[in-house]
Image 1: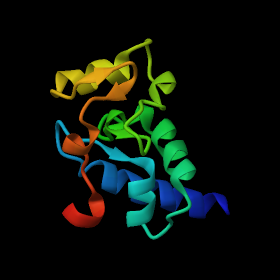
Image 2: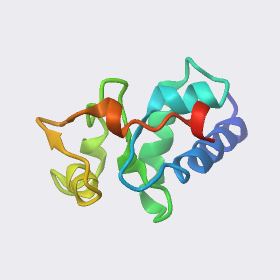
Image 3: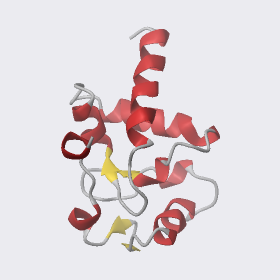
Image 4: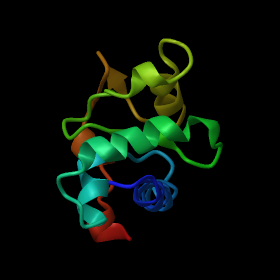
Length: 111
């Protein structure tokens, strides 16, 4: 993939991520599927990792397909991702969202 293509994909990921409502989460795969690139969940993860310098991209609201905070190591501090989610009312235990299906926001259905 050319750098320009990657940049365009990242921007599309950010557009979707910005739509995730406060107190809700989605998965890397759900974003990839919505963008028509179902096998690109890892690329969505790279986009989220690259977004930390952007204040308007809520990367903390994107988790793996099981509700695990797999991206937490890319946040400053050991528990910042969890703290941000908990501040929004999302319960997290052992790096996993409790009642994940109740917090899950599917861009296929909601965008």
